[in-house]
Length: 100
Image (tube, rainbow, N blue to C red; front, top):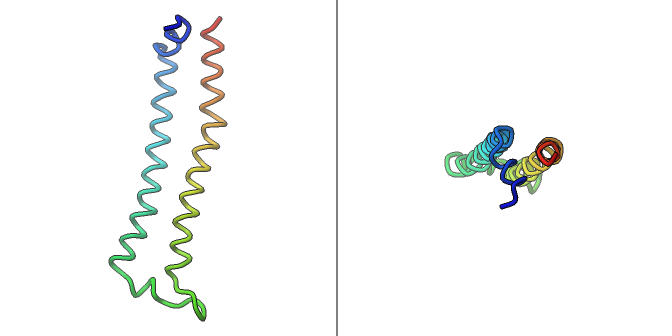
């Protein structure tokens, strides 16, 4: 392995960066589980609520189901924005500092 890469991988700053990424990933994963399984529990436990009409044709279940899908996209976008803003910049800074 390249000595520079080894220094980066063994540095305490890199370890902190990895732990931070895990915390963000686990938080967003927990949010997705709550969103998805909350909807599934609602389907299983209160079908009457989801079957209630909010228009002539549409029931409440349709926009809530779409909300789950959109919520998953938003959580993915939040991770991508965090990674672009924080992870990439910090990894680049760490690599540049250790290459000197």
